[in-house]
Image 1 (spheres, rainbow, N blue to C red):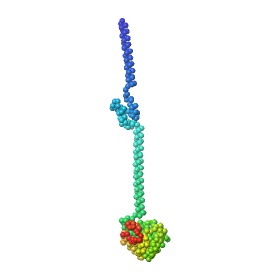
Image 2: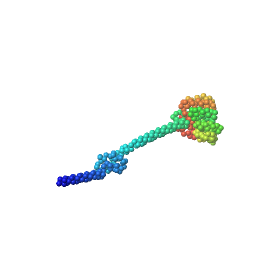
Image 3: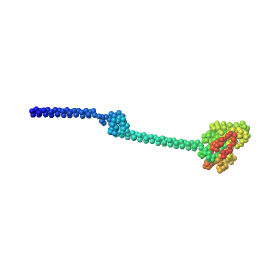
Image 4: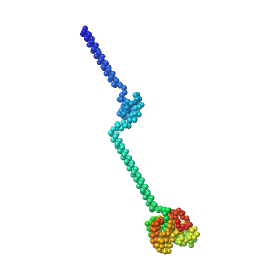
Length: 348
Ligand code: ZN
């Protein structure tokens, strides 16, 4: 019976072992199932990251542990956005840093080029301003500027044109920047048109001294008008300019003359008597030390001594500060509107 009893224990022991094996197997299968179907862990995050537009691998920047449980969907997006730029830079790595350096260098080069272009533009503007200033200065020097606040004298030469004298006078005036007025006789103009054209070209005033140098107070109205008009025609034909002022031969006039010339009549305030003395020094002495602002000086182009005198008078008056101007220039500078039929002997 011992054997029988012993055999029964053996069967019980084997049965217990089987049960243990089965239990162990069940336990193992249970753990495997838990592992395969466990709750969502960190592995689920890539899906969530892609859903909000993140680059794969961005999610570790988010501290999931700080999120409220069960509210990850609504709070995750702004947190990710906040850290996104920094994360992108890190993700880009050395290649991005190199690209950024190249971009910075390109931007610096562009900035330097812009600065260089601006500097060049400023230099060009400065050069243009300087050129305009120089042109303006040259224009004033060559284009005639008369200062009404500085003294001026009008030198006048009658009875020409006479090139042997007139050209010497104009040479000297050109040297000192002065201008003069030439009252020419109409019947002398045509053969001496070249000198007339020089007068005009160099800025002198060509004016009327009648056609035949007749004393107008001895003529009738029609003859007075004819003497004036024919002279103007001859001058205009010779040099293209029609005079606006005239001088009466001998300065002689009466009421009929005043009524019929139909031009301003220019007399004088300094009479050199050069035609009478025929002496250069006498002519010079008649002007220097006596001329004053607004004077009109009477001389005659016909005489060589007058030419000699002019070559002394012109530099001397210039050095004394006088502007040598034409009659029309002086009238304008003094604010005088010259009128036909009136006499003018000075602009004091
Ligand atoms: Zn005369």
